[in-house]
Length: 70
Image 1: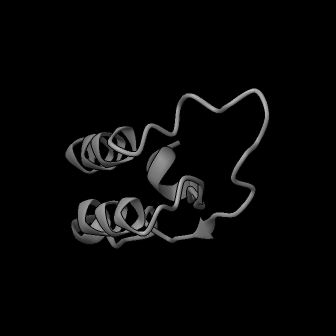
Image 2 (image 1 turned 30 degrees about the horizontal axis):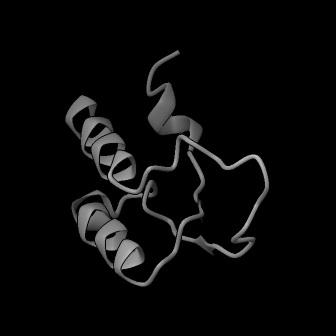
């Protein structure tokens, strides 16, 4: 699971999602379930989003992956 999170984080970093502009110039984005079991496709998904000019991505994080054991 640790490798999966690392892969997802690396793919997201490639989109420069961490630095939001002070004024939102591009208010549109997509909802992509890249964190819900489609781990192996996440790098390609982020690459396609980047190629399409998509700068905002919303995804869900399931609690069972964040804390698999109590």
